[in-house]
Each structure stands twice: as structure tokens, then as C-alpha cells.
Image (cartoon, rainbow, N blue to C red; front, side):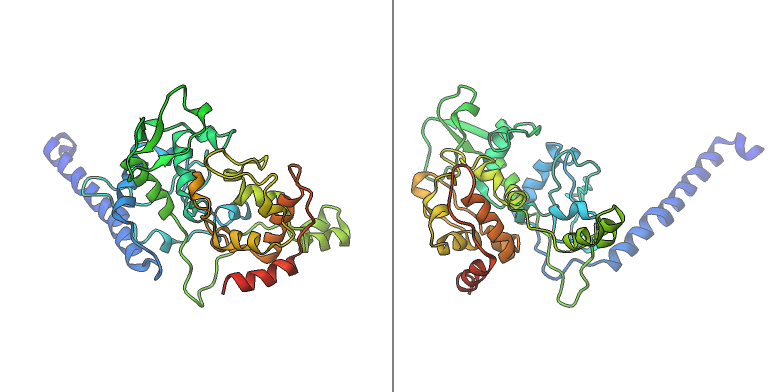
Length: 341
């Protein structure tokens, strides 16, 4: 009992035990985990701008609503091309000596997962408008606005990045919205978030809990339902919502001064679909003089198939008052082969 009555012995023993537990429970497993997992060969380190943007991501509490992890369940397939693996985070280091915010994986997905957002939404213009006021591009968004990352100016310089914010979202302010260096750095970080391709020969992790033919039959669908589940019809509306809607809007009318309309578009309605396919696959920047930002190469970035592109094009050509003919996957496949060589 004398040991428990001697405060020096008691606190010394407690400190030693704490250090031993820290060594064996935290430090040694962490070092072993670091030694076992190396960054993927094609992984790119953060640029200086992206590194500063990461600090802003942390400072503004973005991790509270956004995760950076694609789970291996099928419902997460929309966020990345594959489930996340340890190597995705192996090259991420602490911010500095005092701050260890390595992965920012998050625990709550109030907003969409961001680990592959650099591929899903690479447009600088969209990201800047979205930061200034998310409701300008996604009317249902509950994300807070970040207007302090921008300045309102009457006169802008040649090097200023002007953001095409619709007048109704300006709050009565007059002038042009100019992105500050902080806004550009934050977007640089978001654009850097891309899933790295696995090395050739590496087994691709699978998404689990898939709805397959057996589950369809078990639910009473029978053989016909099983066949449909094995070869589901590609939903052009869903693909449009995933890859196109944030810029061109659900009604196809785009965003004036920022993203062109698809309703009534001569490119969309043209019987010769070569230019249309080329824009989807390789992007487009021929309307910069009208104030529109460049469209990214959505088809290449998202690895869309000919069937998926045909479904998207058919949706755009037959909605919002557009009355052009449907597009076949065979037509698209031939053009894709030409425009991607």
C-alpha cells in the first residue's frame, strides 16, 4: 500500500505505463503500417497551390460534411472508379510539425464524397461559382456559401479570374466577382483529388452487395427479371444527372454567362453527331469570347462507354423541347474511335 500512498512513485509508474502503451499500441503499429503501404506508382504529390488549398479545406471545416473514402459497397460506385485502398493515403503527410491532418477521410457524408472529385468535376469555373454560392449551380444544395474567398470589383485586371455569378445570387452587389488566391488554391486542392489508376496486373477491388440475377429472382422477378438485372438498360437521365447536370442544369438551360444551354443547341440537335461526340470526349473551349469557360473532357475523364455516351446524347436530344432522333451506340463507337486517336 505504500506504493499507492507515494505520489511520486504513482505518477512515475503511470507515466511509464502510458509511454509503453503509446509505443506498442500507437507508434509501432503506425510505423509498421507505413512500411507495408507505399504510394501508388502514378500518384502525384500536391502542388504548392493545392497544399495551401488543403490548409483552407481544413480551416473552413469541409471535413465535417465531406468524406474522402469510397467504401467497397455498390452504393459508393458513383463516387469513384473503385473502392479506396490503403495505398491511396500512403503518400499523404502531415501539414507541419504541429498539425497531423493527413488523410481527411471524414466520418459523415452530408455532402458528396470528394476523393475523386477532380475527375468528376474538373471545371475551374464551376467550382468557383459553387464556392461563391452553391445554390447558383445546385438549387437544392445545403452547403454554406464562401463569399469571403472572393472580391467584388468594378474594374478587373488581365490576370484576375472573373467568376460568372448570376445576378440573382449577387445579393444586390454591383461589379464583377473576382476569385482571390485563397479561392484558387482551394479549387486547386479539390481538382487534385483524383483516384490513381492501379498498376497493370493489380487486381481491381470489387464493390460488394451488388443486386444480381439471383437477388432479382428471389424477390419474385423470375427468369425475365433475372435477365433484366444481368443486362440493365442504361439510364441516360441518370448519367446526365451524374456527369452533366451540375453545369448545364436539370432543365438543360445552362447558367447564363457561365455554362451554355443544351435546350435548342445547334450542336445537340445536329443530325451529324461527330462534333457532339468530340466535345464529350475531348472537351470544348470555342466559346471563351462569350464568357463561357472550357468544358472538360467528360467522356475521357469518366471513362464513359459508347453505350453510356449514346444514352446521354439521346437524353439531351429528346428533352427540354429538343426533338432530334435517338443515337445508337454503334454510331458513337465509330466516332469515338476517330476522335480519340
